Amino acid sequence: MSKRSVSDRRRAIYTGLQNFMDEAAVLKAVAHWENRYIDQPSLALQRFVADICQTPELKEQRSAILRSLIQAMGQDSNKLLADPRGDGTEDQIENPVSASQAFAELMLAMMGQLDDQLQHKLRIELFAALRQRQLPHATLEALQRWLGNRQALTLGNAPPALLQKLLNQYYVLLCENIGPVRADKILASGVARVQHEHPKLDIFLDELL
Image (cartoon, rainbow, N blue to C red; front, side):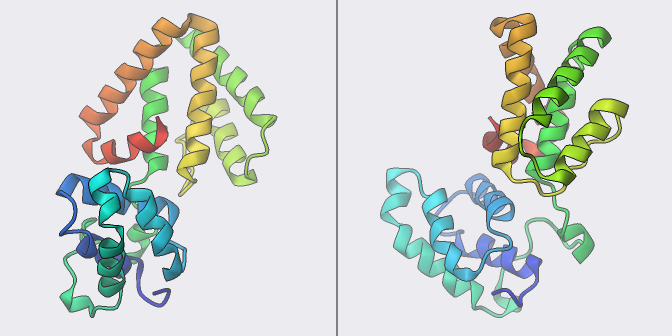
């Protein structure tokens, strides 16, 4: 499995799930694989299947789904369905539409609802809180550049669990500064804006919230 391209492995995941889920669920599962298992060996497929089979119906089919994915991973490329991410180059494949992009857009959508003074205050408080966490150095540097200079937020393929913690930290600061009722409205409005303006990111939002 590790010798195949990212595109072929994604195509195998996409192909292997076709008989078990609708298109939206398949794409969400592919996104989960990209964020959690893209660099994992084939043995990790069992954990991946356990992750995506949460309904009673899917739980009953876990063995069949695992067999289907293993079979797809062993198929020739010409027998697999087209890459759901399109026919991009390998460089594009290494930086797919991801939970990191969804996080960045959601944070900007939330901050955009605040006045400049409060935005600045929350940026300072967020960075102060993040410095106390043991974040990966590259992640902390990216956040520092973003919070200090309003540069584009680039976190690469940061794990969704980490992004969720960062979003939760910001939400806590929102609640402390403007109250939970208004914070909830800002979060809901931010999610709606990302869904409207960046529909391809919608499948990643569930992993952040």
